[in-house]
View 1: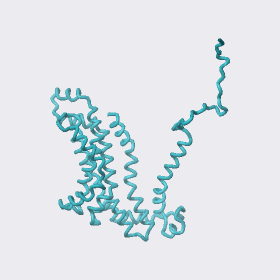
View 2: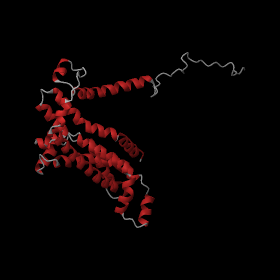
View 3: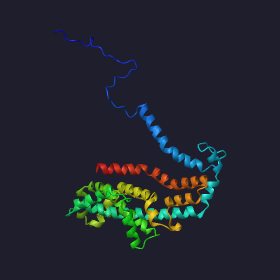
View 4: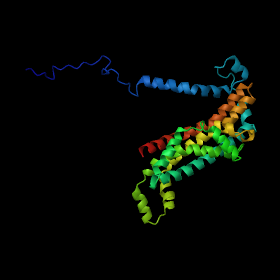
Length: 297
């Protein structure tokens, strides 16, 4: 029986120098079609944002005559008019207060609850963690009517406190789910060594747990801040006084008041979404790093 030799073996190579792909094989992530699709997706998402920003540099006559054209000439009057007014800065201050207090409350309460669930065995620990996990399935939209009744009963209508407290409550499930893996990943030997050195549980929490879980804390803090800054539905129900409006609610009120001045409304909207966009862009890696650490933990 003849045995085929290496010289007799022929390898068919396509003319384009690539191997034949098997039927149904996926394209590699670095292929031009994948990059082309990603570019189209990015353009589709950024086009409305670009239209709003550029529209603020135009006049109403320019927008009416040709909505998709570039400004000719570029005007700063709309942006200057918004920035020199007191309404915009009052709403920025209200949003900053609500987002800052919400972030502080979410981080403090979430870290303490996550520490207890992750580090100490007690009866009902699994049920408590499951309760926080179940909270992810109930958005604020579902509970907006009971929230409105509760806030009105507590006398917090037209008050930023009526917005802050529900935001903290609804941000806690995500915070606990992210922080528990971080705290569980801390070795028990480290806590035992700290106890031998005379460190109390509270001291271990401040000196060891908080620094080691800092990536997760930063992640949940950023998510809570952005979520509070962009919140619209809850302030819409709770805040009726224009002096207490947050920025998303102020955009709607400004658009209603200046409905005939489209260019100025676009300028106000551009400035309103700029802080959250810059904040998210600066801390994007922190968010991804914190979520990656939570999954690994």
